[in-house]
Image 1 (cartoon, rainbow, N blue to C red):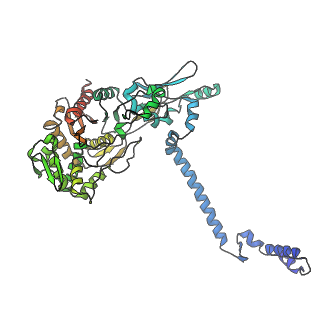
Image 2 (spheres, one colour; image 1 turned 135 degrees about the vertical axis):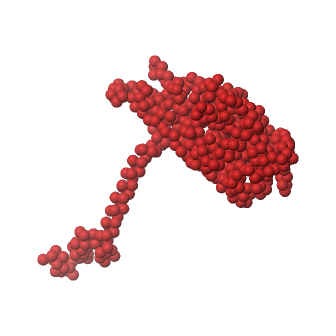
Image 3 (tube, helix red, strand yellow; image 1 turned 45 degrees about the vertical axis):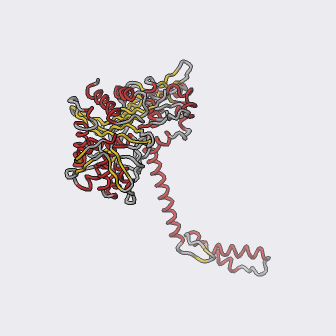
Length: 517
């Protein structure tokens, strides 16, 4: 006899209410015992035969979620853990620094740019032998971190010394020695850029266009990272308004002035196919509707083609070119060159912006065409566009860190150049190279004309104070000789014309690189 039959045969009418209810609950449970065992649970006292399938579905969901979590854990360990540990908000950094002496930062020929000196009593001091010269690019590690000190923080606080040595140090309660970071930075080029910029505010970048390696990066005003503990309050307060902690090369936002004519020319090429048919009669200014654009110092260039317009940096002609270009084509060209968008880079930077769209009025179009108006760029972004021209349209991802070694010099990791994007066709770069070469041979960058190397460039004088007529001095370009090529972008704040101030700095950099002078 089934257990359920036993309960059914029992008489419950004479039982107290509490006992009767209990017996009825028992009978209900036993009657549906098989349903509980097979997953067909009661819902509102009715059988639900589909609930077994629901249970299996939920089981599959939980298994899938578990597998996804395991997969993300592996992905995080391989790709994201360094970034999280590098975060200044991550307190785990303190744990690493308690167990490891911070590794060295070295130049491309392994000269020390930053190292931790340990005194007899165990006191550690971070030392920067070149003081201000590498201040922004190498950064600091006291009062927070910046530059390569921040980007490579996780690496510098890891030790890949011999395993037995690490075990012995751990047992003795002694610190291990952290790994060394070998950078792409060239000391001679860095010194040349630093000295050439002099007492001016501004920034200098030198890159290899084929690899993206940053060979030099200078920003002024600067600071001495050796004295951060004592000067920090004054640097943060910044009563002078000099923004000494700001890396102007990556975070400085400026009107690009006539260097932007590279972008305007590219938009024209994409719409009209070439520059051969363009002609313009420059009288020193151009007026459309209520906007008047003057050439620099009101120079009159006469009847000129696009090549001469570029070489002489004729504002009137380029304002006219801007009006000829379809607004959508102009906007699309700017977007293709990474304006108004984030760029994937291994370090922080400021985003460049340009205001051009189908709704832009005549004034906005004319101002944008000559690199004025609302257009804002970083020297880094301009260097990347210039690198693409030198590298057949391919822009490589800029980077500082070439490899990692343990303190004995054993290779731990090596970094390879990575393509960022193709932003121009090879035929487009050939036209731009021809125009940039003309700026050197017969235009505003003529001071770079030499037999030692072949230079290409574009100068700029970016106005930023309408009442006083002040302007930043720009140059962006590249030079090549004996199979080698470098790009440099320079801005000298408030100095004046690009040809007078920025171009001579470029000449010193090219001479240093190609002749070691």
